[in-house]
Image 1 (cartoon, rainbow, N blue to C red):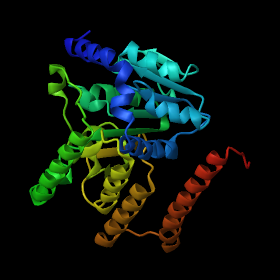
Image 2 (tube, one colour):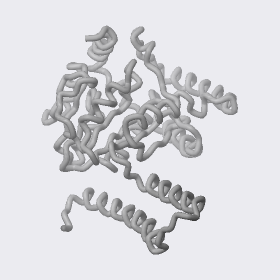
Image 3 (cartoon, one colour):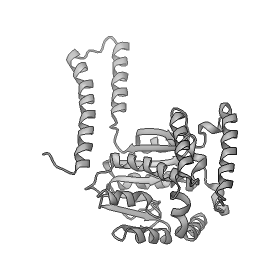
Image 4 (tube, helix red, strand yellow):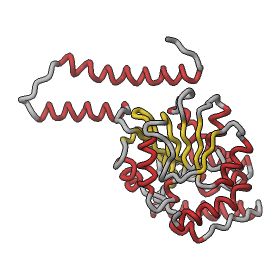
Length: 313
């Protein structure tokens, strides 16, 4: 095993017992997790296999199990982290393995979750390649990663950032918060820029959805006051149009998002306009966007059907 993996595993083993307390117990951390979980539920199919890569103590999978998902497999490099997950979910299928060498056949999973894992890796493209191999042809990867250039890091927000940092230290001092010490191995951990993450995913898959979240509350993820947390999350909503601290990415082996289809259709119209020699029946040009819109309605219908858990066929 490579030295960086050994160091990473050693850190996770020492943190396993208190990991949930430090990273998922505060109101803001719960709100962040809830938003990512809602995105996962939007794409995960209850009766198909779901893989959680680097699932750790099972923050996402625990919520999926509560919602009736049963075919869930969680993998992680740390045995201690998976033991903590099994304490909460005895029925969970948990496997200790390296994410760069997944022990599954090709095209095994309809949904793959990858929550804040890639920024831990010196070579994230290796794990992404393995995820792609294990993903079914029309399956979906739902991932989240930290954003290096969120709005508070930009010059025009420098004064806002200064006030926000002062408020963060003030509130943490009131609550006597003591930060978790991180080992030297975390020096290579980094956040991604938008361009870096788009390039990383688009080099291997088609991006169906890409968004940034949490422009302000990212500074207060350890705050335990429910009242202050609600106010800080309200500021998040006010800054929703700005670059957030976390990217949410949805991608697939196959190109299929309705936005992508509409963009390709508009590009096709532009090519027809520029080349007068090309001819296309007018009815076809009208019916094609109607089919795309109808497909969008069909997608909503399928989501409702899956949530109700009833078959209408």
